[in-house]
Image 1 (cartoon, rainbow, N blue to C red):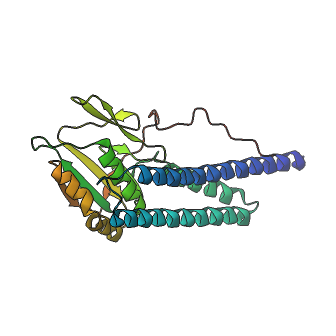
Image 2: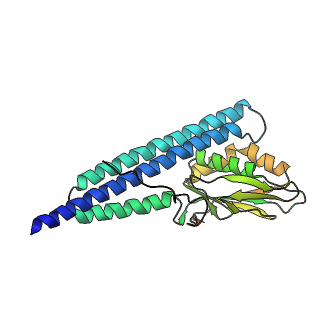
Image 3: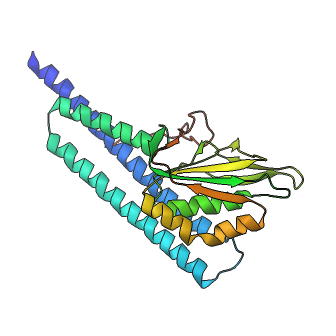
Length: 252
């Protein structure tokens, strides 16, 4: 009478193991896609409109940081797989492990509100003639990713791997779209970041050309470094949450 029960347990463990493996592969794929997207964006966008030595050096530095982040994440995923193997047939330990991994992946995917030490960038547009473009925000987002930001939001829109920022509308009535949602504001743009204080302060100090460019466009830029910054989750009905056509490939 015990054999059918044992077979059900073994079958459950195999299915659970496949599920977590698929989740880990999916998240690594998102990381690789994000790095490739950043490479393409950094090649196509140049805030100052030239390829100065300083600009190229900053691109190399940003890509190097992003590459190191990917290596660290890959090492973490391998450690998780080793831990899964170590747990063996301990059902309770495996359940707790899967729960922890699901929560971690949800945070990484931007589906969970998060908080932590960080940076708030306030870009004020109240001066006459002040303006900002999607390209300006995209450059800042990419630079923050390169600086090792753990989480980013712009006007309460969470930055995720599939996030894009684009201009729409007309020259007289421009709009900025992020995650398929309008974030246009006549007063200010607030960029919230969670990350290491030292790295974020270096980011602000090193990227003076970005802030100078915004000031020339009439914007007033201010920075604060709160001990706790709250960043909202990506709405599950957001166009950036693209999973309706995704199906896992069965493992042989």
